[in-house]
Length: 130
Image (cartoon, rainbow, N blue to C red; front, side, top):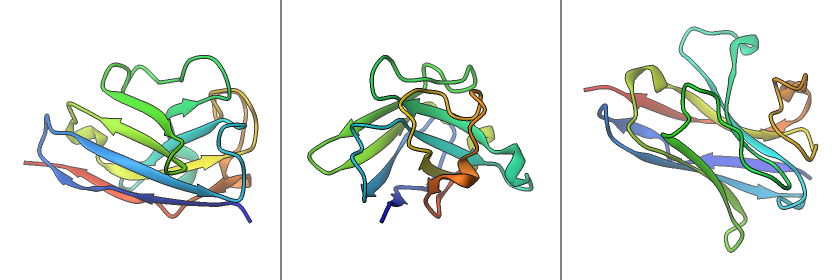
C-alpha cells in the first residue's frame, strides 16, 4: 500500500527556513519521481503548484518561483524525501504535500500528469508571516 506522510510545517517569519519531510512506504522511493506541491489559501485543487520534483535520474526540477531557495533530496536512511526551504516569503504560505504518479521523470504537472489520480499525503501547513 503506497503511503506518504508529511511533517515539518509551521509558522515562520519572512526570511526564515523550514525543512519538510515526506515519509514514504509501499514503493521504492529511489525508483520513481516524487514531487512536493502546494495549494495556496483560497485556491482550488486545479491551482496546485508543483514546487519541486526529484526524478529517478538527472537533476531535480524547480519552478522559477522557488529556484535557488528550495532544495529537494532523498534521505535513504529514513526513507524520506525532504524539502529544504530557505529565504521564505509570505507568498510561500500554503498547504504543502508530497506525491507521486509512479513515473520516472520530472516534472509531473507540466508533463501532463494528474497528481489527484496518483498517491499523495494529507499535507502540512506552512505559514510565512511576521
